[in-house]
Image 1 (cartoon, helix red, strand yellow):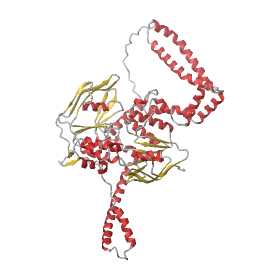
Image 2 (cartoon, rainbow, N blue to C red):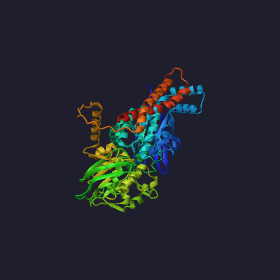
Image 3 (cartoon, helix red, strand yellow):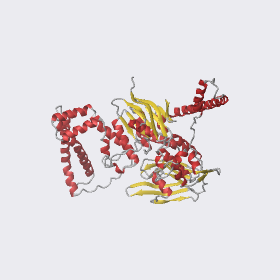
Image 4 (tube, one colour):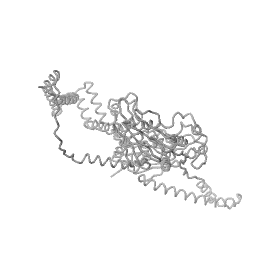
Length: 624
């Protein structure tokens, strides 16, 4: 089969001031390929994505697209025009079938002639217009979106992300660019998205820190390192193996170059500069060796080490805690007593009350009932979804110095604010850059630094993995693995939960919180088994004891009149339904008549359902 190239990039470069993001990148994307880009925060991943959509951003290089390609980009934080409804957004798709439907509806509304209507109907048929409506409804349901008439202005970040994703999938592009697609999504949607992308026929280029996505969805990984691409033809586990080999080879080659440089330097010093017989080729080689030997392997890693305070006997107790609002019950009655060293993950749909529970524990909100008791020795460290706020006017070093000029580590060692920044990969130049210039992931890393500086012994992390690069995530996981205090974490990152939490609070809705003793993957397997049993197993026939009939309620005068009229109304609606169906089944269709019938049929069916349901309700009453 001839696989066609969709996009070709040649010698693409981009810098901001003195900071180089990437240089001479050359790569291509073919039909059906699923590629991921991984790199440290601030390396230019998101800038590269934006450059692929708008080549004018690049300093140099070329980007070529296959003629007629349908290319779409899902940004980290999608935005829509204010005042739009869900329907407005989903029906904005550029799918040719939807455009044909809009054209047909416009002709009908303007009272166009029969010939124009027929041409429009033919176009709808040819472009799959009748099927696109069903696809829109399917995506609306799969993404668990609010009602079609809801205005999106006050939607949460998760709702906006799901809406943008639904709009994109309706169009079924040839190539999708996605920047952190799993951020702000709940776990059910993430797992659905993973399966959907595995089966997606188009090509995919994504930035993600979701390691299960990288393992299952992507067959090629590009690592952006030292301003260039390193390609790995395999999934995440293959990438880890090959990356280690590559870095080991680089270190070995650098060591050899340094040894050779010492020898050549000794020769150059021993050879008088005026000697005319000096070998020119050896002098030239000295320059090349010197250039290689002076290279540095950037193997810095985030170093997290704090001196957390010891926890006393009483840590945190929740007694019959409940939380409700006038229109919603979030938590019914929850009891739990934390023990030393516990690591608890919190999972559940967006809006189910996970963040509210954290706020009540921290004293930022009061429970509607019950009480929360916090031990005297507890020092909370709260990493919120909002991240670092109102600090754009400060330099990185100033943000840290606001908390303290130095920090004491777990062995009594003291680090200055500058040294601490270095451990979090903020070098001397970046420490004196304004926070506003940092990437999203770098701001998250700085925020994490400010939390850990306070030496907490009970960490509460609300979506800590958003925007962090894989290297920082690995360092955070290693730190938390050794953290002696308690950990309570809300996360949509399944890998993160599986690695760190052996206990779950599962928000099931309706105020119920299930206390599950096990890892996330164990809970998901249990849920799958339960769902399979419910779906496949025949329901047992249980003989019920005869129930005493409740006395019927008597029918009032108005209900008696309604009861008498209903059979005739139902019969008339059924006759109208049959008439409208006959219009669709006719071999000689009048386009105008078909349009009118299509507009009326659903209203007739809905009214018929209501009347039949009302007849059943009244039949339960005593009318004698």
